[in-house]
Image 1: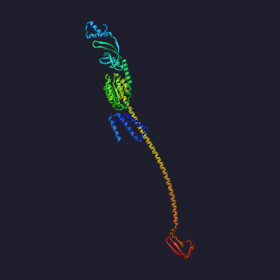
Image 2 (image 1 turned 45 degrees about the vertical axis):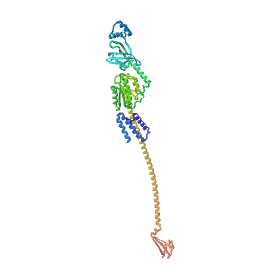
Image 3 (image 1 turned 180 degrees about the vertical axis):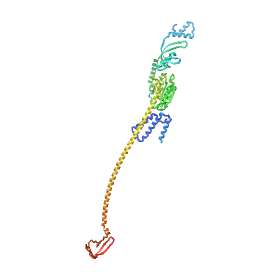
Length: 69
Length: 426
């Protein structure tokens, strides 16, 4: 679980991304990337509240694969 | 029998009685002195140093000056008295009669031949104990405040998601089971990871045991989000164990926030005051934790909605802008095309007009050419006409020649030289 951001860091990052998008201060090119990141963090937080460590490790692996693809 | 004031005089008396007493007889003597001299009850304050219930309640009472014991005495509460007295005391004072508390009681001074000197307690005043406990609690709290320890644990930020819980309790405590069940069966499906640090929650070993458990929790602090102290289920027993300076001090220096769920209805103990948060029951502790996690989940949900909403807004804007540009573009293009078409048309018209003129001229030229051709002497000759020359000059009239002249006649093809034979006028 070391490479997973803490709840606090995750929610701060999500808030920051949402603020940027709401202020419309995001470049189109970067928009998709940021939305993807925020969606990932949201999914991770939600999952983590309700599951064991193993499932979280799985989610992290999936996401990394998606990035490399 | 006179009152004997010191042992010296006693010996003198026996000498004069010239009788050797058995121990029993001596004790009888002593007993009768006590019965006579101290027949009444006394109101006494003392601290309970030990308490043992074997049908009757046997106590050791002490009187301390600071930490030094300056007086000590055994006491008894006979079973029949103890039955009602203990219940009344507990209801009134909120705690049970136990080691460590101070009491104000009414007692006879009893000397028994067999069992020696004892105080026979017939009544206890709970408000004195309450007062004493309150005083002691107040003193401890003042000390903690002075040393800056009382609110230290409160300065720690209560975790955003308290998911890893260190529980300090006794494994058999109903409170511990309540807490675990509540967390495990929470209605939102949250997973909590709980670790028990066993401790004794009542009696004289409480202080050391709880401090030990707290320190184990400190050792595991990087794997935990919060510590919870829960106790009891039922009874009111031994709250005063939690009016403890050392436990509070340990809590003050912990790197984790402590939830105090000691489980009592009325008082706020020192441990309660020193903790980050206090709740009234173990169930309430579970609810506090679960609610905190729910708040976090709600925040995530809200952010998720905002994200979708904001992103949709941007893409909708983009789409609109794009379609606006496209429409604009279309109409501009159309305009341009129309203009060009128009210009082209005009040009074509002009060109057509020019062609017409050219054609007209050409026709005119052609007809002129035709005329010219028609009048071309060569074409005239072709038609059979000839030109007659006399001396190089074309002859137009018969008067220009005489008979016998030599004439040259140009034909379409060739020439003739001829002599005039005769001539006629027109």
